[in-house]
Amino acid sequence: MDLTSPQPNGNFEHQFRNRFDSLLPTIQKRWPDLTHHTLEATRGSFDELVGLIERNTGLTPQGVREQLEELMHSTGDRGKNLADALDPIEEQLEQLLDELNNTLRPRIEQPVRQRPLLAVGVALGVGVLLGAMLRGGRRS
Picture 1 (cartoon, rainbow, N blue to C red):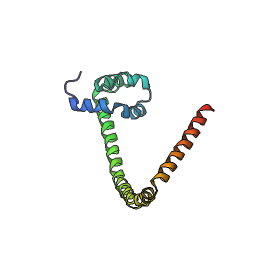
Picture 2 (picture 1 turned 90 degrees about the horizontal axis):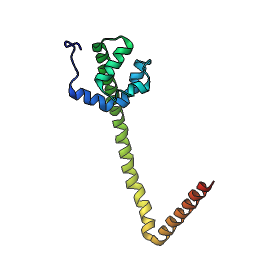
Picture 3 (picture 1 turned 135 degrees about the vertical axis):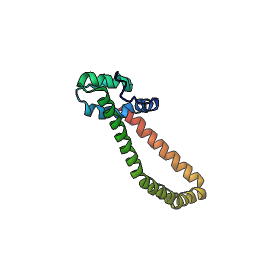
Picture 4 (picture 1 turned 45 degrees about the horizontal axis):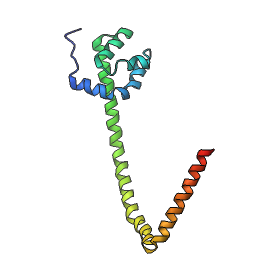
C-alpha cells in the first residue's frame, strides 16, 4: 500500500458504505467490465472496491480512490440540486392542500352533520360495493 496517498477517513468510508447501493449503477457505468455481482461482493467496503477496480483495470489505487470520491461527491451534489428544485413544488403542494382543506372540508362536513345516518349508510354501501368487487376480482 502506498503510504503517501491519502486514505479516506472513517466517516467517508461510513458514508460510502451507506450510499453504496445508490452508487452501484454509476460505478458500473464507469467500469462496465465489472459485473454487478462482483461489485456487490465488496459489501460496500471502500478499500475492497478500490482493490477490485485496481486489479481489473490497471489503475493505481490513488487513481481509483480519486475517481470513487469524485463519483460520490457528484452524485451527492445532484441529489442536493434535486432536493433544492423540489422545495418550491413542495411549498406549492402544501398551499394547495391547505386551500383544499379550507374550502372542501366545510362543504363535506355540513351535509354529514345535517344527515349523519345517511352519511353512514352511503359509506357502508360504498364499502360493501367495493368489497364485493374486490372479492369477485379474486375469484377470476
